[in-house]
Image (tube, rainbow, N blue to C red; front, side, top):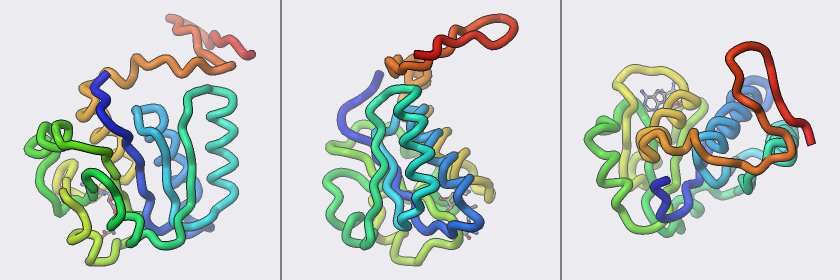
Length: 174
Ligand code: SAM
Protein backbone atom coordinates (compact mmCIF):
# COMPACT_ATOMS: atom_id res chain seq x y z
CA UNK A 1 0.00 0.00 0.00
CA UNK A 2 1.23 3.55 -0.81
CA UNK A 3 2.37 4.78 2.59
CA UNK A 4 5.02 7.37 3.14
CA UNK A 5 3.80 9.28 6.16
CA UNK A 6 0.81 9.50 8.44
CA UNK A 7 -2.63 10.60 7.31
CA UNK A 8 -4.69 12.27 10.01
CA UNK A 9 -8.25 13.54 9.55
CA UNK A 10 -9.10 16.82 11.29
CA UNK A 11 -12.84 17.26 11.82
CA UNK A 12 -13.58 20.97 12.17
CA UNK A 13 -16.65 21.86 14.16
CA UNK A 14 -19.08 19.39 15.62
CA UNK A 15 -22.45 20.13 17.15
CA UNK A 16 -22.85 17.26 19.62
CA UNK A 17 -26.62 17.02 19.27
CA UNK A 18 -26.61 17.02 15.46
CA UNK A 19 -23.24 15.76 14.32
CA UNK A 20 -22.23 12.83 16.49
CA UNK A 21 -23.32 10.15 14.04
CA UNK A 22 -21.65 11.91 11.09
CA UNK A 23 -18.46 12.56 13.04
CA UNK A 24 -18.39 8.91 14.10
CA UNK A 25 -18.87 7.92 10.46
CA UNK A 26 -16.00 10.21 9.43
CA UNK A 27 -13.87 8.33 11.99
CA UNK A 28 -15.04 4.88 10.89
CA UNK A 29 -14.37 5.66 7.25
CA UNK A 30 -11.02 7.27 8.03
CA UNK A 31 -9.92 4.17 9.96
CA UNK A 32 -11.22 1.67 7.43
CA UNK A 33 -9.85 3.53 4.40
CA UNK A 34 -6.29 3.84 5.68
CA UNK A 35 -5.94 6.99 7.81
CA UNK A 36 -3.97 6.78 11.05
CA UNK A 37 -6.15 8.91 13.28
CA UNK A 38 -8.97 11.37 13.81
CA UNK A 39 -8.58 14.73 15.52
CA UNK A 40 -11.68 16.44 16.88
CA UNK A 41 -12.12 20.05 17.86
CA UNK A 42 -14.87 19.22 20.36
CA UNK A 43 -14.42 16.74 23.20
CA UNK A 44 -17.43 14.53 22.51
CA UNK A 45 -17.10 11.39 24.66
CA UNK A 46 -19.81 9.56 22.68
CA UNK A 47 -17.77 9.77 19.48
CA UNK A 48 -14.46 9.01 21.18
CA UNK A 49 -15.78 6.01 23.08
CA UNK A 50 -17.56 4.52 20.11
CA UNK A 51 -14.37 4.81 18.00
CA UNK A 52 -12.29 3.27 20.80
CA UNK A 53 -14.74 0.39 21.05
CA UNK A 54 -14.49 -0.31 17.30
CA UNK A 55 -10.68 -0.18 17.40
CA UNK A 56 -10.53 -2.46 20.41
CA UNK A 57 -12.73 -5.12 18.76
CA UNK A 58 -11.77 -4.74 15.12
CA UNK A 59 -8.03 -3.99 15.46
CA UNK A 60 -5.56 -1.58 13.93
CA UNK A 61 -3.78 1.30 15.62
CA UNK A 62 -6.16 4.17 14.83
CA UNK A 63 -6.12 7.01 17.36
CA UNK A 64 -8.64 9.68 18.31
CA UNK A 65 -7.48 12.98 19.80
CA UNK A 66 -9.00 16.33 20.67
CA UNK A 67 -7.38 19.72 20.06
CA UNK A 68 -8.64 22.97 21.52
CA UNK A 69 -6.76 25.22 19.09
CA UNK A 70 -7.24 23.82 15.59
CA UNK A 71 -5.60 26.85 13.92
CA UNK A 72 -2.33 26.19 15.75
CA UNK A 73 -2.69 22.50 14.93
CA UNK A 74 -3.03 23.28 11.22
CA UNK A 75 -0.21 25.84 11.28
CA UNK A 76 2.13 23.47 13.12
CA UNK A 77 1.46 20.49 10.86
CA UNK A 78 4.65 19.02 9.36
CA UNK A 79 3.59 18.05 5.87
CA UNK A 80 0.71 18.94 3.62
CA UNK A 81 -2.68 20.17 4.74
CA UNK A 82 -5.51 19.13 2.43
CA UNK A 83 -8.86 20.83 2.97
CA UNK A 84 -11.75 18.98 1.33
CA UNK A 85 -14.23 21.47 -0.06
CA UNK A 86 -16.51 21.57 -3.08
CA UNK A 87 -14.85 24.89 -4.00
CA UNK A 88 -11.36 23.41 -4.35
CA UNK A 89 -9.35 22.02 -7.26
CA UNK A 90 -10.53 18.67 -8.61
CA UNK A 91 -9.30 15.57 -6.76
CA UNK A 92 -8.05 13.92 -9.94
CA UNK A 93 -5.89 16.98 -10.77
CA UNK A 94 -4.22 17.11 -7.34
CA UNK A 95 -4.02 13.61 -5.90
CA UNK A 96 -0.74 12.57 -7.58
CA UNK A 97 1.04 15.70 -6.37
CA UNK A 98 -0.33 15.22 -2.84
CA UNK A 99 0.75 11.56 -2.83
CA UNK A 100 4.25 12.55 -3.90
CA UNK A 101 4.57 15.42 -1.39
CA UNK A 102 6.94 15.00 1.52
CA UNK A 103 5.72 14.47 5.06
CA UNK A 104 2.41 13.64 6.64
CA UNK A 105 -1.04 14.54 5.31
CA UNK A 106 -3.60 16.39 7.39
CA UNK A 107 -7.03 15.94 5.81
CA UNK A 108 -9.44 18.65 6.96
CA UNK A 109 -13.23 18.38 6.73
CA UNK A 110 -15.94 20.65 8.05
CA UNK A 111 -19.33 20.10 9.62
CA UNK A 112 -21.09 23.40 9.08
CA UNK A 113 -19.57 26.26 7.09
CA UNK A 114 -15.82 26.40 7.81
CA UNK A 115 -14.14 29.70 8.78
CA UNK A 116 -12.61 31.47 5.73
CA UNK A 117 -9.01 31.20 6.94
CA UNK A 118 -9.14 27.41 6.59
CA UNK A 119 -8.83 27.91 2.82
CA UNK A 120 -5.64 29.91 3.37
CA UNK A 121 -4.14 27.60 5.98
CA UNK A 122 -4.50 24.63 3.64
CA UNK A 123 -1.72 23.66 1.24
CA UNK A 124 -4.41 22.27 -1.08
CA UNK A 125 -8.15 22.95 -1.27
CA UNK A 126 -9.48 19.86 -2.99
CA UNK A 127 -12.94 19.09 -4.30
CA UNK A 128 -14.49 15.68 -4.71
CA UNK A 129 -16.81 16.91 -7.41
CA UNK A 130 -17.96 20.54 -7.35
CA UNK A 131 -21.35 19.78 -5.81
CA UNK A 132 -22.26 19.79 -2.12
CA UNK A 133 -22.43 16.33 -0.52
CA UNK A 134 -20.95 14.80 2.60
CA UNK A 135 -17.68 14.84 4.54
CA UNK A 136 -18.00 11.06 4.90
CA UNK A 137 -18.06 10.53 1.13
CA UNK A 138 -15.31 13.12 0.58
CA UNK A 139 -12.96 11.39 3.05
CA UNK A 140 -13.71 7.96 1.59
CA UNK A 141 -13.06 8.99 -2.00
CA UNK A 142 -9.94 10.97 -1.16
CA UNK A 143 -8.38 8.06 0.75
CA UNK A 144 -9.37 5.54 -1.89
CA UNK A 145 -7.74 7.62 -4.64
CA UNK A 146 -4.70 8.26 -2.44
CA UNK A 147 -4.17 4.55 -1.73
CA UNK A 148 -5.33 3.45 -5.21
CA UNK A 149 -7.80 0.99 -3.67
CA UNK A 150 -5.11 -0.96 -1.79
CA UNK A 151 -6.42 0.21 1.60
CA UNK A 152 -9.37 -2.17 1.41
CA UNK A 153 -7.00 -5.16 1.44
CA UNK A 154 -5.38 -4.20 4.75
CA UNK A 155 -5.38 -6.67 7.63
CA UNK A 156 -6.36 -5.00 10.91
CA UNK A 157 -5.45 -8.08 12.99
CA UNK A 158 -8.56 -7.56 15.08
CA UNK A 159 -10.12 -9.88 17.66
CA UNK A 160 -13.24 -9.72 15.53
CA UNK A 161 -12.88 -10.54 11.87
CA UNK A 162 -15.27 -11.11 9.02
CA UNK A 163 -14.97 -14.26 6.96
CA UNK A 164 -16.15 -13.09 3.55
CA UNK A 165 -18.87 -15.34 2.27
CA UNK A 166 -21.31 -15.48 -0.57
CA UNK A 167 -24.31 -15.77 1.72
CA UNK A 168 -25.04 -15.00 5.34
CA UNK A 169 -22.83 -13.46 8.03
CA UNK A 170 -19.63 -15.21 9.05
CA UNK A 171 -17.24 -13.75 11.57
CA UNK A 172 -14.67 -14.82 14.13
CA UNK A 173 -15.31 -13.07 17.43
CA UNK A 174 -12.29 -13.26 19.74
N1 SAM B 1 -22.71 24.08 4.13
C1 SAM B 1 -21.32 23.88 4.30
C2 SAM B 1 -20.50 24.93 3.57
O1 SAM B 1 -21.08 25.79 2.94
O2 SAM B 1 -19.28 24.85 3.64
C3 SAM B 1 -20.95 22.49 3.81
C4 SAM B 1 -21.10 21.48 4.81
S1 SAM B 1 -20.73 19.86 4.20
C5 SAM B 1 -22.10 18.92 4.68
C6 SAM B 1 -19.50 19.36 5.33
C7 SAM B 1 -18.17 19.11 4.75
O3 SAM B 1 -18.24 18.12 3.73
C8 SAM B 1 -17.50 20.27 4.10
O4 SAM B 1 -16.93 21.15 5.04
C9 SAM B 1 -16.43 19.55 3.27
O5 SAM B 1 -15.30 19.24 4.05
C10 SAM B 1 -17.14 18.28 2.86
N2 SAM B 1 -17.64 18.31 1.48
C11 SAM B 1 -18.92 18.45 1.08
N3 SAM B 1 -19.00 18.45 -0.25
C12 SAM B 1 -17.74 18.29 -0.72
C13 SAM B 1 -17.16 18.21 -2.02
N4 SAM B 1 -17.90 18.27 -3.13
N5 SAM B 1 -15.83 18.03 -2.12
C14 SAM B 1 -15.07 17.95 -1.01
N6 SAM B 1 -15.56 18.02 0.25
C15 SAM B 1 -16.87 18.20 0.39
